[in-house]
Image (tube, rainbow, N blue to C red; front, side, top):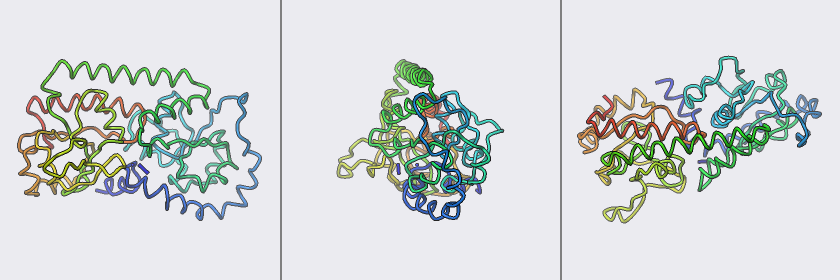
Length: 340
């Protein structure tokens, strides 16, 4: 689906697109076999399977099995009582902040059923990747499946739709309206800010993650980051066709492309915005990488580091991204770009 010890855990658990593509298939199937010992246990809780009627009270004991959806829940003004590995939400999504009292219900695709039973949720927020486990989960509490926007060809409109859908389920539609309006205001403010500084928008950018000292994950057409760049009026060099390379774009059809660092020579005018964090091993590696050091974008200090922002996060993540891009471009324009 299209998302140090910290770095190694992040590659397995954090919401990057490669991980999502795997977990949508084999990860979810693994859940089915992992949950099968709980079949008899779950059957005892079959009374909680009925879907909430439209006249039912709004759910207030909510458990989320996905970090990006946890973000949207928080942005709508509701704190879950439990989520998968809450510390990893705090390190990979960051905002809105998740309170310390939120229970850890286990792995993303292998939740602790005993913990779920003890929490007695009245709504489980799951993803399409949890489909094989949904019959078991529905015996514990009503479920809502969201997160398909991450694999959509048009992820931003899909994200808006899912934000409204979750708010409707919470019986807080006005909160979604307010959140979307706030995001529109941030985008308009950043676009206006950049428009007054021609130097900040005269050249395109590449938004990427440094996978290691030799490879980048570059966000292209079909990603939320690309949509946000369009909205704030910044060109994405990953979408530009280059006659020297046969007109190919930096995209695999999933909103991102994994490319070697030497491909940066194809877009020499583009500044490079790296989404944090950069693993210490990767930072040390590029310091020794002669190809990296010879790149014009590196020599001219047109590389800068963005904060930790989830590439398939919710609207708060997209607000943070728009603001971070403006800050990064100002830093580069003032000659202060670089990772040192």
